[in-house]
Image (cartoon, rainbow, N blue to C red; front, side, top):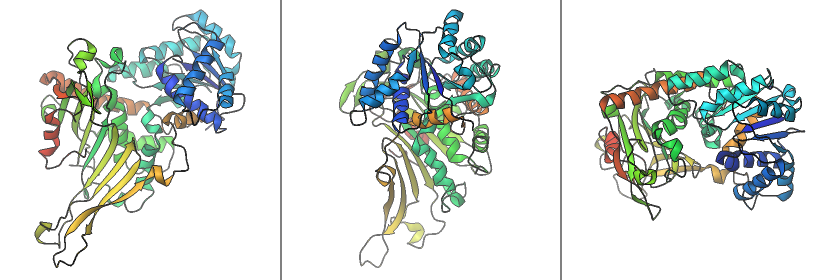
Length: 487
């Protein structure tokens, strides 16, 4: 790592992500004394406005999204004093020159560029910066997902940026990697001797990963339709979680070692075909229903027209390597689910021989489970068998929970926004929690096999009422293997 960058250039600064996540994260880092001295935030968007107007807008966003208990007018004022606003539109060389004048040589001292824009603008924006002399060997460029819409377009985006800066200067953002509980997966696996020896096909029956959202389109109509749940959530968040769950132990905790092991997993995912998608995947689209006691419209009604875009997907994936051969990974994500939750379940195999009656029948014996909740609560639960109290001669077992609430265990510490960790690492040049090019392309290669399979098989989304866990075929996907989703 090099010295922290002292200039943060944000494109898409007038957007929703900047207001909800990026500026509140910068506020929290400043409040904790974690931003460099002489820090400058250069905000850029297509909207014409002066510094004062933008600063007022950001102060209002901080009041709303930082929270009343955390908001401090003095800290907010200090942050806003670090912000200047410069309108820049891609392709407008004159505006990029004005941006360079505004930076006044700071690029030579280390410039961090954050592209919170559509991926089609990544390379043209970077080219504009290069033409204005703003990209140097010390510059860093962060890109929000999605990186393309398939493997071909992903390569195009990566080629465009890669022609201007080295891979060591590129930071591809998946905000799930900034979540404390996702990072804790590494600590759980490699910091506790009781788990790693069992973390393989010998002891594990299957793995479930669920990322459920209660929201619908929420103003993302222009982006979401035509993209769908597979590209929007599985390609990045879900596969990143899977890669951490399934990776081999890295030699050390650094960006190269960790990401080397993750990409091996992603390359080992068994591709799907027009035949296998019929039994290994489910597409769904929500219709009207009730979520949280409120009646909500169906996807087509929100969109205003019929659509073949899936809002739910369930998959049965296999990792063809020594550790995981034959172990199914059940993945599901969707909108308008009954609850908002991100969760991993590790289902262990039954004990090889039961001493509690024939095969354990009648005794209550069940296989162990490890449940890791990422949101909204953060906890780790190990479900184990215990004798039910009593004087009966026959031993009756009950499932009991060893519960570690990370929220309670670290009650004195503030629950941080994922972007705080990512911005801090970005400023410091640490790529460990960012996605490398070969990871992105391995993810897209597997996703493309599913999309191609759907097209060849003519698979359309099955309807499911809002407030349910997807179509009934998603339940059948796992139950025909003798398992059940953990809801």
